[in-house]
Each structure stands twice: as structure tokens, then as C-alpha cells.
Image 1 (cartoon, rainbow, N blue to C red):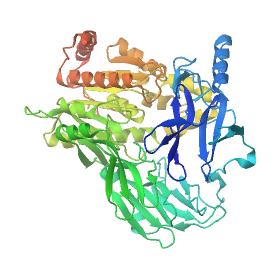
Image 2 (image 1 turned 90 degrees about the horizontal axis):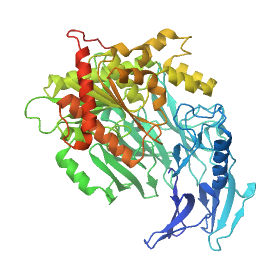
Image 3 (image 1 turned 180 degrees about the horizontal axis):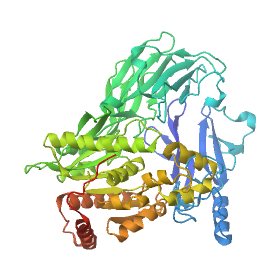
Image 4 (image 1 turned 180 degrees about the vertical axis):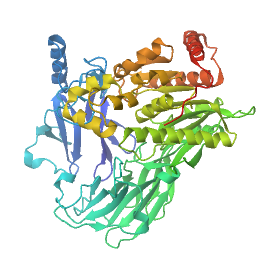
Length: 607
């Protein structure tokens, strides 16, 4: 659950939101470990909170009550759900089908909004501010004048300034640190470079720019102020070093920039690269993780860069992976000179020649549980004799054919590289991915003969996707045109024939395992069902799952089935566990059908 934590004055308590017994409330934990307790008790879930400077009052925000949300859901159930642009049609169930904040709830898109985030019913109820006296525990409504001031947003900056991608406000002075995309877009989704600057105050029209070599031409992706100082802390995520992160401090008065620390992996406040570390005037507290070393909490001294592990919950796993699943950073270029990086887990126990290879394409930051989406167990594949590679995506291009072509080129060129070194068997290659990774995997299956087998968890471009999503109206049409250069199927038929798996069924030779969330599988049925009829696809649907699966049992099932799938197709291995008998019977039928369709000399060329 996203949110933040706050220290009480004097450091006795830590305040945070927690989901307990179906209710989201503000809790506080004693730093001496003596216990934790709720400090709010509200019929509605707490959306956010702020502690007063004296630590005596806690102000918090709520929306609709839990009972009101449940009543609204039941009313729809009784009277029928009216389908409009807010209803996520095509996702499976419409009534209480998505897990939101620990409960299966009915979901909605925000009316008129772009994007695909889902919210509960009545999420549009305006914020209601309340305050609780932490001594008496009495709660009252807050007047508008008592509400905490909102931090400035990009829309409030002077119009002469370019819109920043991120901003951070110094609470002591009101100065604003800015990250702004600059440079020639050249067909990319975002401008290629980043400029770090400081705005002296909200009404200023001129910025002070960071101009030293350490902060120009760098992939800066996170900023925050060092408390009670003139320094902005910024994080660089270096694409040439496999998304490895470094942290610097910039003095906005002197212009000096100093390296704080650098790593070969992730340094942030979470498992994602854009998170902020916890910060004091003396130190950062960050989550550190590398491709084959699990996350741990580290203290980083801002002056010396010294690092101290505060909490490492996965010591045994880290030691085991260091011995059994080492990884290495790969760098290579394709025939056009495009540079790629990836984390490579060499197969173990391959004394009898080159190993099979599994690849996944998208994002490979931090500890690689299984590529973005955590579905393909890279270390386990390597442990069973299949080399595994996670490839970092090339800069995102708006043209879908160019974007997918970059992914295909990355796969083709790394197969050439590893095969030329005798490390892998180019005739036994599997691939999988989530979201863009799914799209590139399907493109690679459709447009090349590189793959023996594939595994996806998301959807490719399909007419079902257009049909269901067109309920969103202009917002969807704009997105479809911008990112895929598609209109309605009747408007751009040639483009649909190129991009849609349903229009390219005859080119799909590699068998595909589809392990899809209930929210998305219906969208893929226009190509999944014909492939299943023809024994070229196997489909599993995970109930109550969104785009990224999160339920532990489902994650484990996906891991195990992917491991079985690629061992079957790349090694000819079948787990003797009798529970899996039906699985292998079906896959053997698929193998027979695939073999029957194979025609010598019919290899396809890649785009």
C-alpha cells in the first residue's frame, strides 16, 4: 500500500497507514519496539495524513465510508451495472472482482481521465479532512483554513518555464528542485536528456541550473532536498551500466556537485528505481539490491559515502545465490549500432555443450526475481541448466514497429553473441515478458524463427482490445494513435494486419504459454482461442489479478509452470510429480502438433 511514514517530535513514535482487519487507519509504532497502536478510528479508510509540528494533532483525509461503498456495490448488483466509460468491460467479472486495499471490490476507471488505473466505487467523493487529538483521541472535522497546505504542482509554476517531470520542495525555504526533460525527441516517447535546476520560489521565472559534468548528460530520475541545507540529492540510473544507480549532492548556492555513493544495482526507497530514500541531514536510508542479491536496508553517510547494513532479511538467500546463481552484466550492440545491456545468469551443470537460453525483455533493475512482473525465475532456470538473460529495453520509441523491432534486434544480436562464444545453443531459445515484454515476445514469435517456445502474461494488440477499450472514447483513441499508430480496424486495416497476432496466426510457429490475469485475458481471446484450437497455445487465467499479479500462491504457480514449460520445450524434461501428469499429456499433444506443422527450410526472416 503506497504511503509515507512520519517521525513524532522527539523520535518516540513512527506514524504510518496500515491495513488491519479490513480498515485502513493511521497507526503509530514505538521505536523501542514495545508495540504499535491505531490512532484513528473512522468509518472510512484514511487516504493520507499529516502530523502537526508539535506532535499533538494528527490531520487525516477520508473519502466515502466503507459501508457506503459496500451499499453502492450491492445496489449495482441488485439493479444491474450500467455500462459507461468508467466500467472496465472485458476484464472478467464486474462485481467485486478486483482486490483493492485488501478487499474484493467493484472497480471503475475515473470518468474522463486518461490512463488505466482502477479505483473503487465512490472514489470520486471529495477529500474530507479531520483531526484527532493524540492525547484525548477526540476527532473533529477540519475547516478549510486548518488544512495543511498542498505542495506546489507543475501546473502552478510560471508559464514561461517548461513543465518539469518531477519537482521537490525544500520545506524550510520554499525553494523548488526541478527535473525537466530536454533535447530533440526524435520519435521517442520522452525527450532524451534531463536538466536539473532550482527555482528560488514558486513565483520565480528564472531557474538556477546544475551545470557541472556530474549532472549534465546524466540519466537523473529522482531528486530530494537534504534537510536544513542548500543541497539537492539526485539519483542517476545509468543505462550504460545496466541501470546501476549512483547518488550525488548538488549545492545550489556554490554549484558544487559531489558523489555520495554508487552501486552496481538499485539504491532507492523501494524496489523501483524512482523511489526516494529516507533522508536526514546526515544520512540516507535506502533499499539496496543487485541482480543476484536480495534487497536490504542500508544507511549511507552523506559526507563520506560510507554504507552500513541496517536490516538484511534475506541473508541466507543472498549467500546461496552468491554461490549458486551468480550473474554478470552483458553489454552488446546490434547491427545498427544500438547498445543494449542485460543481466545474464549462466546455466549451471552444462558440461555437455552449449546450454539452452531464456530471455525476457523490458526492465532489469534491482533484484531479479523473474524479470518485470516476477514471472520467469531466472536463477532457477539457470540452476536447472537453462541460461537466463533479462534485457533492458531500448529508449521507448513511439512508432510501434520500430519499438518492437528494437526488441527483436536485441534478442537476435545477443543470441548471435552468446552462440558465437559457445555459451548457448541458438536452436533452443525461449522468451517471455509482461506488458511491453509480452508485445515484444509475440512480435519475436511472429516475425522471426528465433524461438523454440514462448510465455506471456499480458495481451498483444487485438480487435478485442480495441472493442472493449473504445468505451473510453477520445482518451483511448488518442493513446491508440500515439503509441501504435492505429485507428479503428476499418480505418487503418494495413496497420492492424501488421501488429495484431490475430492477423498473423500463420506465422506463429513456437508454442505459447499464456498465464494471464483475469482483468486482461478476455482481450486476448481473438488470437488465443484459435491458437489453442490448433495446439499452439496453452492458457491459464488467475482470478482477481490485475496487470501485475500479486497473490503469493498465484506467483508461485506461475513460477513453477514457467520453469516446467521451458524445461519441457528446451530440454525435453518432464517433472515426475504425478500431480503434473495432465499438464505434460497436454504439452506432448502440443509438441506433436507443432512438429507436424514444421516444414524444413521454412525459416522466416526477422523485421
